[in-house]
Amino acid sequence: MKSSGIGGQAVMEGIMMKNGDTFALAVRLPDGKIQVEPGEYKGFVKGKRLLELPFIRGVFNFIDSMVLGIRTLTRSADIALEAEKAAEAAKKTAGESGEDNSESVVGSSTKDEKKSGDNGLLMALTVVLAIAMAVGLFMVLPVLIASPLKRLGAGTFLITLTEGVIRLVLFFLYVKLISKMEDIQRVFMYHGAEHKCINCIEHGLELNVENVRKSSRLHKRCGTSFLLLVMLVSLLVFMFVRVETVWLRVVSRIVLLPVIAGVSYEVLKLAGRSDAPIIQLISKPGLMMQKLTTKEPDDSMIEVAISAVEAVFDWRKFIEEAKEE
Image 1 (cartoon, helix red, strand yellow):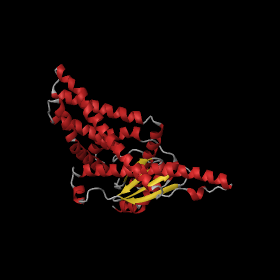
Image 2 (cartoon, one colour):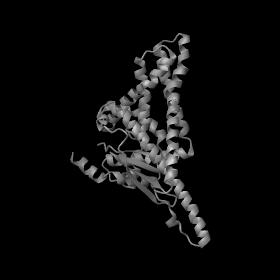
Image 3 (cartoon, one colour):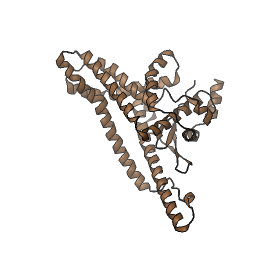
Image 4 (cartoon, helix red, strand yellow):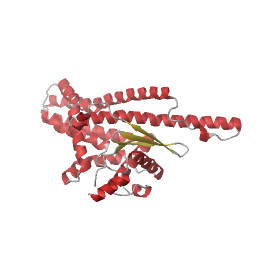
């Protein structure tokens, strides 16, 4: 299997696919049509050499993926709002004139730009708050829960191990909880469609609904696998970071987070291009977790995913080149 290098993200009723500096957002509109918006995102780091340095690049790529994710998620929400307004306007116009003008009223991507910008700022602030809460929940809270074990005579090793286990349990419970939400389930179905498309072309199959449908919804380069790797790598790293004071333990967890993210990114990147037994073993926990964060999509979702892929990636050329290697 050859890695395509493309990646994506599920959004509201759609998918964003990225290939290099180009990306495409494909969203299913209420009238059944697929709206595809191509774009370019070069990242906030101007010196591209930083993105080539092992362990360093993981941190910047993670930030870039967040920024682009916020942008496309916000845009997908705007598209849904525009479509809703267009439908209401069409009904009102049809009621006044006795004609159906829904075709001419569907919103364009440039409509209400100021409001879109305001929504983008609100989304950015929301995500920053979410990140702060995630750090507090998965990095700080486990330290606070495990620290009282010291009064019971537990050593540093046992306290750190307990902290890591608590971190993993909290992460699992969080994923399990949100996977039960109805709206999130649809996002997870699109997430599955994204993975299935990538798996389809990386296994040398023609990109069509039938082939995508029978492809796996689990992929080793998934963001879910990355987050789980962060949890596991943090457990190993903190085993060697011996800090007795509680507040210093909290600070060390936050300060070392970029290092942990960098290491996790390199492991994930290696997993995407290797089928070695040890890599398969390392990837297995993340793949198991993806059974919660991905769901089997319907054919309409697969069509959206295919549209997003074809807007940024020449899968026919990729398959031909893979056959020649």
